[in-house]
Length: 373
Image (cartoon, rainbow, N blue to C red; front, side, top):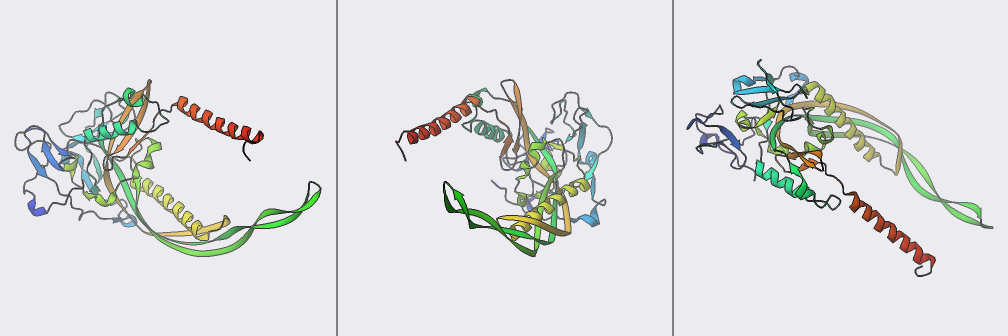
C-alpha cells in the first residue's frame, strides 16, 4: 500500500534524530509495514512525512562540483569499509558490523575519518519488510517448469539484507536531425530455365528511398546506479522503480537499515546516461526513417537542459545454495520484483527436445507413407 502524505502540522515539534528511543532508550528503526519510526522494545512510534515538495532537479552544468554536501557522522551514522571488495556501508552509529553486505567477507573495519556525500534529493522507503521479501523468494523459487522439481524444498536461503542503494537520475532534452535511406521490399519476376522449361520465378528486390527529418524528445529520470558492487548482470534490470513515489530525503528512513555510499561519481554516471540517451535517440530516428531495411542513417543530436538528482532506493540482497552452488538474488524493496538466477533441469529440457524431435519424425514418416498430404 502506498503511504498517504502526512500534513506537516501533524508532526511533533521534537523529532527523533538518533537511533535511541526517547521513551525507553531502546533501538528505533524504520518499519515498512507502518511507515513509521518504531521502537522494537516499547512500541514508541513517530510518523514520517511522505511529501515530495523538496525534491528538486539541479542543472548539471551549473551545479556540477557545487552540490550540497552532508557530513554523515553528524547524522548519527558511521561507515564500515570492506578491504575485500571495497564497499563502503553506512549504518547507525550504535550498530556493529562484522561481515560485508556485498561479498560476505569477515573483518570489515569502521573508518575513523569523517565522510561526506552529495545530499540526496529523495528516497523511496522500503515497502517490503523482511518476511514479505522472504515470501516473494519462496513464490519465485517455485516458478518455472524448466527448473528442478525439488528446487523449492532444497534451496537454502541465506539471511536477507535490506540495503539502500545510491542512484543518480538525469533528465535531458534532445533535438536531433537525421537522414538516411529506407529500403522497401517488393517482388519482381525473372525468366529462368528449370526442369526443361521456362518459368517466371519470384525475386525479392529493394526499392531505396532517401528521407530526412527532425526529432525532439524529453528524457525523464534516466536512472544510473551509483554502485559498482551490484553484480553487472543485474544493474540494467534492477532499475524498475516507480520513481513518482520518491519522497523528500529524510535520514530517519534509514534508521535500522544499511546504506551504501556511492562509488560512481556524478561525472562518470552522467557519461553513461548521455550514451543511453544518444542510443535511444538513434533508435527513435531509425523508427521515423522506416522501411524494411535501412542504410546510411546519420543522426546529429544536440542535448540541452540536463538536470540531475541523487536518490536512494531500497533493495533486498541475499543468496541461496542448491547442490553446492551459490546463486545471488536481488529483490526490489518497493515492487517486490526479483532478479536472480536459477539452475536448469537438463532432464526436463532433454525430454522436451526428444518430444519435439519425435513429433517432427512422426509427421515426416506419415507423409512418406501417404497417411497425410
